[in-house]
Length: 115
Ligand SMILES: [Zn+2]
Image 1 (cartoon, helix red, strand yellow):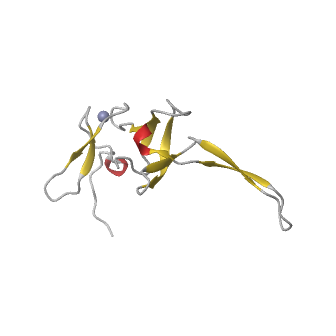
Image 2 (spheres, protein in one colour; image 1 turned 60 degrees about the vertical axis):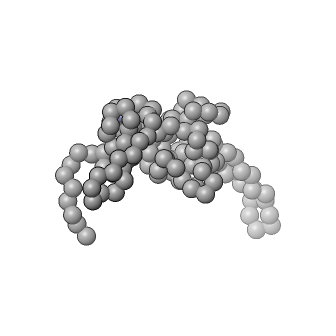
């Protein structure tokens, strides 16, 4: 899966098509993601003897294949490629501008090693 938590994505299908949001959770097994304010669902909790009935809204999972990652560098919905440099972890890059789309590394500050 190419989508990670904290990515900003564009929804490409379904009732929220065209909306943008931030990825909150990724479900690798089912290839689904939940995105902030996308696919809002309402759940009714029946009232019982111990508590009153409630209405809860929550973000329902959507298929990861229906979302496109928005590149933090060029701000465009982009195809994701991979780049691996010697001694480094595999990085996701934007195929348009070749910049990394990994949120933590998007800022161009020098890395400091701290523990
Ligand atoms: Zn880009």
